[in-house]
Image (cartoon, rainbow, N blue to C red; front, side, top):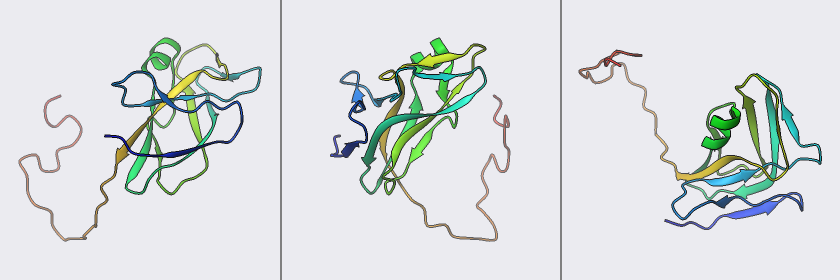
Length: 147
């Protein structure tokens, strides 16, 4: 399924998100940095610019996920695990990139740092009640199903 989505370059050197293959679920987001790049120290989190803003249609959300290669090869992944871009946000897409490794990592302008997935949103009408329906699991939490 395709939807139309407006995107704006906030800087002439910004790179628009793009799908790396026909079956890709996420469009790659690229770093916008000065000539020195951006260095993320071991255990550090840095807010990284992409230089783009999007108009996500109402009823959809933008989800910012890690790129598997960046995470496994360099230890860099979004600090909040999954970033959420609401349909009414019009500012620059930024990625809080965390270095899980033990050595500093420098990323250059144009490097692919995360991927943007556009997904439909279902909202709930919350109804406060005194009791919830019983289930076999009940209130069993972490590890209660055997794993």
